Length: 112
Length: 111
Image 1 (cartoon, rainbow over the protein chains, first blue to last red):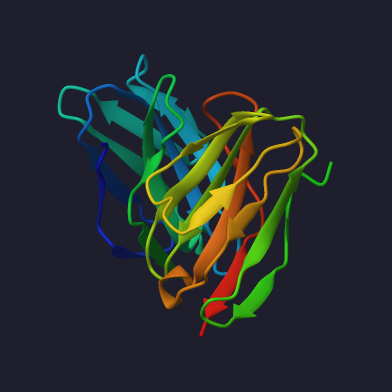
Image 2 (tube, rainbow over the protein chains, first blue to last red):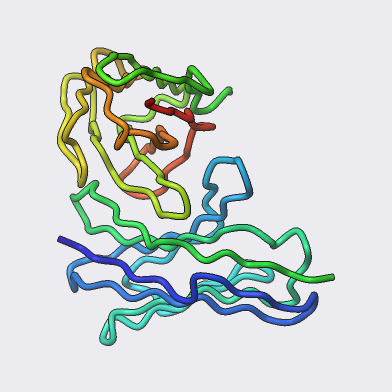
């Protein structure tokens, strides 16, 4: 089955700096890649997603890039703010398959 | 819309006890999912359903059962609780095969 690996497990940045989180996946048939943000004690919430027919997607300060050949995708957060501090999860799934696999998460800390 | 709701929020079980975790969504979503999240880890899919009367196993189904008699409800049943089932359980739903919306979670401890 699909295996998703996420790096780094923890990331600390200064407010205003950029943060990058990377994920790799094993199943070349995967074609949907969401990113979730989970604040302490809260539910995961979708922040951005990308499908395999697109190489990059941007939404204000966050962007996701996808390299299908290399089977990796990345989350980019620019101009980080303290409220960006949370755990971020990447995931991957296939068309007609509800078995979404998640990465282990990255704990992002933005220092004011 | 309340979205996805779960009850209870917290529960402590003794080994061997059984319980049902409730999940309800009011968004008329066909797809519903149950995940578990162990401390410091990602989410693992337990079971999912693509519509009333249809369920299927995910990555970690052992020790659990589900049913889907209505579009709105997707309960998760633990028959013989074990310490390995101590976790936070999240229910989610989606209107298509992609974007999933999560409930607030149920924190379960088995002692």
